[in-house]
Image (cartoon, rainbow, N blue to C red; front, side):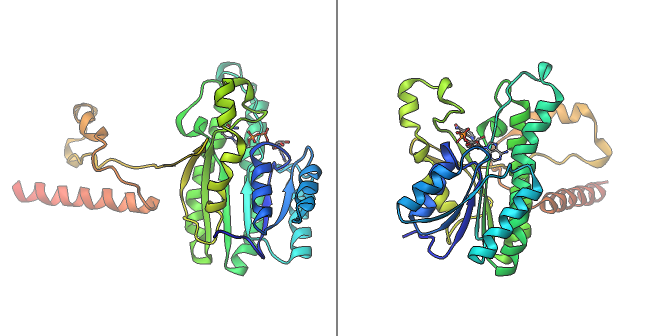
Length: 296
Ligand code: NAI
């Protein structure tokens, strides 16, 4: 059984949509939940309390670092710890890149990226000190695969993966596990885009079981989970084996001629950290040079 007895969680943007379901799901399994939403967190707090759970309201805009820090201090003063951060708050400002005002680019990055940084950062020190933490970033297929008219949102959502990759490494020794979610669900954000039948099966409640696992005691780390309508997948960044050209024969034509081999997905694998790639490339170049000097 996955349970959250004794755990304290914050869910941002939890007044509605997918975040609301995460907050209710965590509370139903014993977590004390800080329900954040700059719109209306109080209704969800009341729902949790009516069902016998524990919750506190947080009206902060996640992009306001002072307000976020004040919330975290209040929660830690009252409940003694912070174990789980579910970064979910989000907005859209869709326009083609050609027509997008810079303010819309900044605003969306501010809410999704800086908001997630603010909330996670204000919990990070507590999680390090207690040697336990679970962090979830809400990414999106728009950032991972692309979606017309969402340059601001796609950039912000892809940034979640970069944050996860680094925080996974920095959190590992403190048992802080960090994952990403790429959900698809019917909410006020997407209702107009879906057929009635799709809208019905893609209820936001269908995402939460995946999230509860991703923030549980036995959670994986550095996983990007796709979720919606009962489907759960893993989205992976892998690198192909590619080719190694001799250092004295590096031309764009040689690269072009090898394009099929460079892009051949057979044997592609995830890379565990940036320096693993650096070391692989260095080793391969050194081996190639040694082989060339032997035959010369
Ligand atoms: P929603 O619009 O129903 O809920 C988002 C909530 O976040 C709202 O209650 C809103 O008031 C709150 N919020 C927005 N900005 C905030 C801020 N600066 N500070 C505090 N609260 C703020 O949206 P939905 O669909 O539930 O989305 C939840 C997350 O999932 C978002 O990050 C969204 O980008 C992401 N997502 C949703 C998808 C979908 O199919 N619905 C697809 C991919 C990603």
